[in-house]
Image 1 (tube, helix red, strand yellow):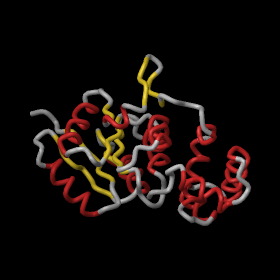
Image 2: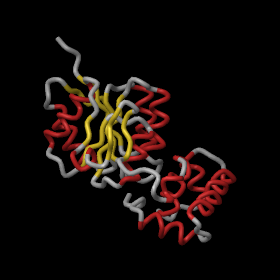
Image 3: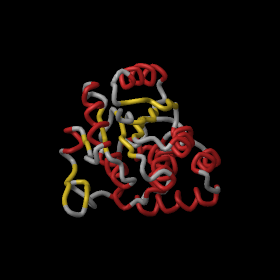
Image 4: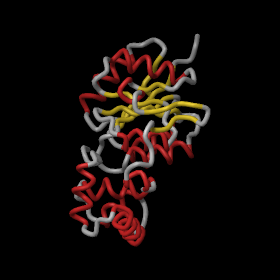
Length: 218
């Protein structure tokens, strides 16, 4: 008998975890090894269980899913991440590509699309929802946004993007430091760099910018 695809389900909504978990478990070739409600727990369980697939919501409070994905990729390289979100902004897609995600599914897709994505990714084939696929180019160099480098936000590093998102959520610098497992001084350096690159010199304006750019839905 073929070993079923092991899946770690990550979503901050209990109902989504319960309903989607039941749907996945109903498939004979799939098994949900754990369900968790945030990216911190996802990192711990992914390293412990090393599942085949990690189906992870993007829009969760606490540690950024992209930050978690980077750690998971280093600690459990054989686990393949599929992001799930109601949003498909270029910033999200770019970060998903940067952390080498295997898939990106929008929540307006039917459940069967989630099953299809899991099976394709397990077989080594990347899966992107049509709305996401329309925004990327896949060639010999891999996947990338179809229009890169045209905005100031594209100049930000991954860490700077995470700090910007947390600032947009109204988090204090000490809270950001704890969430990202870095020092407050490092948060300050990232904030200073953000202001320089974006030509914004006020923290409130930084938050407003992030909201306008669609970085603060969570």
